Length: 184
Image (cartoon, rainbow, N blue to C red; front, side, top):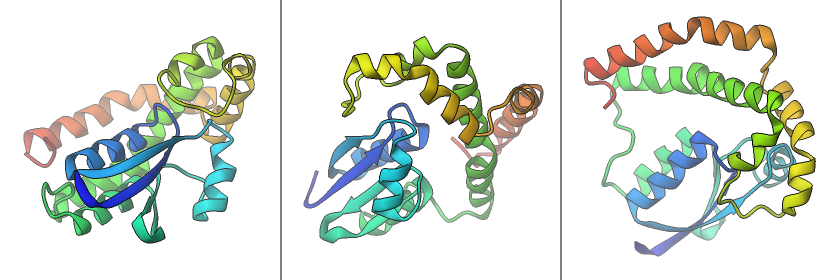
């Protein structure tokens, strides 16, 4: 671990961008404390703390705030040179932008549409998290949380059907980037 640097990482459990940042901190050897935020309620906390309602959010030693997985990874590369997380390759930057704008929202829509249909599965989504909500309350509020999150993420039936119809096209695009050595 980089002894001179510490951070606080604000996450929503099971969020893939949050998991990516957590792994990046580990790879860079930066000590951090993880703060789990409940889905839906996280928006108000993040808006107050970072000025944006999304996760992940990172507060570095000295109070510097960075929000969003790509911005955080870029800042970590500036702070600790190796290993490089995001090379400055033009094709990789296009893939990264596409991932942020297209792929991440698909993942969110599919997850929240599924949880809207099966809110009883929501506790597994937060497994291992240290949420500031009693387990019984979390279980009872699962349907409401899933419905609000589905609505916030545009996970209506028509949108999810379109995502599923086009999923093969998106996966083929990723496969092409892997074959070309852009992703690996």
